[in-house]
Image 1 (tube, rainbow over the protein chains, first blue to last red):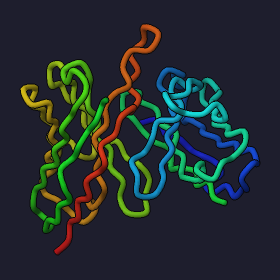
Image 2 (image 1 turned 135 degrees about the horizontal axis):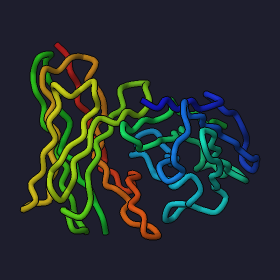
Image 3 (image 1 turned 120 degrees about the vertical axis):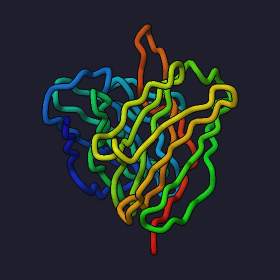
Image 4 (image 1 turned 60 degrees about the vertical axis):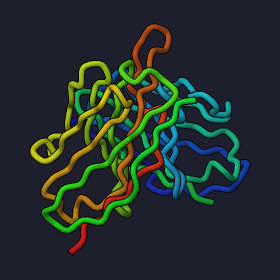
Length: 106
Length: 124
């Protein structure tokens, strides 16, 4: 099973600042299978980035994904109030797994 | 538009079984697989299984293989999750999700559409 480790566990920032979230896999994975999800309290998770760097429908361009091999990054260029949530990276290889999440808080 | 509507919350005793349904709208049901994901209180997201829309083939998380069954009814566009021998560790919000589909000629299995979630509480 591929383990995804996210860092930091909690990221405290202010609106307008830049957020950088990291996801490291225990082995190299295909970029086609790496995604990021946003999860706000009381709501279903939402696909933000798929294929490591492609924004999902309706996701603003302040969100960007990058990386390859075993290291991936989600960057939010200028935080808006609605961006504060928990973010999970995910891979759907033979046995899909999620990272433990990064809580982005004000 | 694409919608997934799940059945309501359940409260079960340890040892019981639970069925959660996921009714789909707005797309051709057999063309996309359905994944199930759960979140226990205070925990992260956990993938528990997948069922192919076309032929019903399933892949299940190893830890749940003996207790979990995924099925679908192609005539109604509904997917089902059945979990047996419940323990308190199965208390969670359960989500059904639909695959993204083909992008640039490559099938993407990412979870593009989500149901609203179903809280399953296991308590004596």
